[in-house]
Length: 96
Image 1 (cartoon, one colour):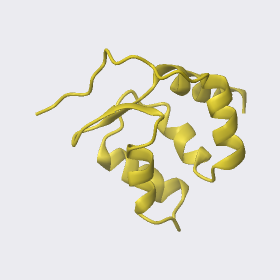
Image 2 (cartoon, helix red, strand yellow):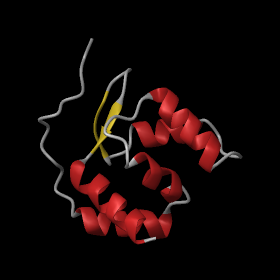
Image 3 (cartoon, one colour):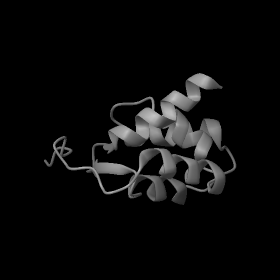
């Protein structure tokens, strides 16, 4: 089974600007902010968090998050958020 690539190189994006854009444009931001606390995001965690934070949402949101550019790797077992993006989201969560 493939494991997440923990040595992957970060894309050429500024985490601060990327998170700013997510906060302004995405109704998923509260869910993403919660998921940023996890080192590994497993399917059950994603499903339970979505149902808790966005109970009226469609399951397609899980696929959108799983394969989003904010994830540095994903396989059938888990996905992992880019460190800089996760750190910035957690920092903002602490401020709230």
